[in-house]
Amino acid sequence: MSDAFAPSHDFKTQLTDTVSAAFVAEGFDASAGRVNASDRPDLADFQCNGALAVAKQAKANPREVAGKIVAHFAGDTRLKSTDIAGPGFLNFVLSDSALSDRVNAINADPRVGAPAVAQKRKVIIDFGGPNVAKEMHIGHLRTAVIGESLKRVMRFMGDEVIGDAHFGDWGYQMGLLIVALNELQPELPYFDEAYTGDYPSEPPVTLDDLGHLYPSAAARGKTHMDFRDLARKATKELQAGRRGYRALWQHFVNVSREALKRDYAALGVEFDLWNGESDADPYVEPMIADLDAKGLLVDDQGARVVHVAKPGETRKKKLDDGSVVEVPSPPPLLAVSSEGSAMYGTTDVATIVQRQKEFGPDLSLYIVDQRQAEHFEQVFRTAYLAGYAREGQLEHAANGTVNGPDGKPYKTRDGGTLKLHVLLAEAIEKATERLHEAGLGEGLSEAQFADTAHKVAVAALKFAELSNHRLTNYIFDLDRFTTFEGKTGPYLLYQAVRMKSILRKAAEQGLAAGGILVAEPAERELVLLLDAFDGALKETYVKRAPNLLADHVYRLAQAFSKFYAACPVLVGNDAAIKASRLGLVTLTLKQLELGLDLMGLSAPDQM
Ligand code: ARG
Image 1 (cartoon, rainbow, N blue to C red):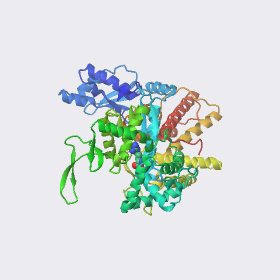
Image 2 (image 1 turned 60 degrees about the vertical axis):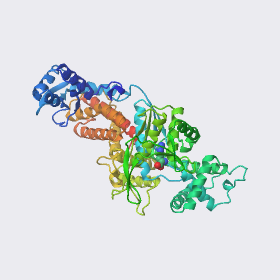
Image 3 (image 1 turned 45 degrees about the horizontal axis):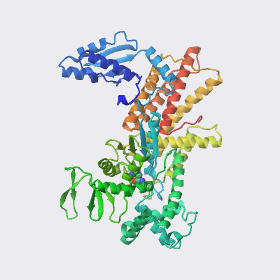
Image 4 (image 1 turned 90 degrees about the vertical axis):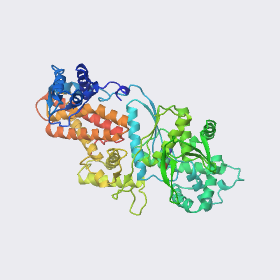
């Protein structure tokens, strides 16, 4: 991991380097020198447990080994103390001067202590994945929020990142809509094959219409086979380029896309590309021909599939008659349906070909529900088999579901899914209530208050999302997400606003920030967190896990709160201390706001 980044200067790296060198000098493996933040911050800042492991291997006394390592730190001015605890743990306490040097270096660094990647990559992040005619609901929150954050983190780390919505605008769902509208308004010119004139520029449907049309058509497609067959036929004709269908489809796409963009904008989610599944269409035919030429296409009851399981990769499947057979696992990718249509997997593979041609990404990251894991396994394997991507270039960073109190995917009381814009409106209402309860935002104008309530609501939703690992299913609880206490987005904003207010008052009093001198325990704690930003960000990047960044930002805000309670900033007679503490507040705010921004949050100036 470390060689992918520019050298780090954080304490963890510094100490790991020194301790590893000491282990090597004593004839042990460098890997024993790994240093971590201490489990007992009351006793030490950092610790290393490596002596125990190597001593066991060498059948030596671990405390003796630890003693040899400690000897290498004699005269090291970075440390106030080094000692051996228990059976041979190494404990390190940093000196105030080392902490001061480090924090002043972070302060002087425009990247507030977090070096970029050594070699920048081209990354495509496929996230959001909204669909035509389907309004977004709570289930779309995860991919949008996680994807947005990873996009920002990777970009900050120096990569060239393209966020693509991979709009679901192709396939069977479009056929369903066409057939459903044909039934309702057969007189529209889109359905008349003999029609050669221009089509109306006004869409024949509104977003609301689509919202009603789709669910009933989808339901009928499941129960009425003649309706399903019509929809399949329409899908095929659309894909084959039937003029009226294409024109109608364009309306569906436009109407949906505008609404979706509005929803995303309200959440602070942005895409660089709004490519749809349909944009891969021109690539489908040549790709199918290529798969065929490479001998990868196999006929299967009128359809054409790609076998992706390796020999021996099977699972047991129970048939209708109760017998059990071994089937390939993952199952084959359905490339061409028996009707001759391109399927979801087909467009995904074709999109890989398209992206390769248009951008040549080093990495394509798919932030999609883990329930699609098998789909991506099929798609990636097909792409690797066909040579459209190198092994490892395609990655599914899966996410879990947002659940209701019953532990099942969240449903509204009437059993429906909660629409994203309704959800946001509810969150804003809750945020407004909370602000009033806490007596916050009272001095603000109406417009400022509305802006603040919006920021608090977005922070509540996004942070609740990001503070869980992306694979962890979490329970949706707006009451908890919106409080100003505990591990919540609003708490983070509140701490940022406190810092801003301190800095405003300082400016009014003509006080300026200066060099930072670490002395108090609460200052040490805060500086250790500022120092740990680098590591948190790298882990977030490597593991595609914004919850690690979320943790860091939360702990930073907490450490600030403790610091501010223990160390007065604006009062006192010692000008150097005031300047130092103001410096610390300024820097903490800078790192906090950067962290918030990397999560897609933003703090108001006042509350
Ligand atoms: N539109 C899809 C859905 O609603 C998600 C798309 C995810 N991205 C992809 N390349 N398949 O399930």
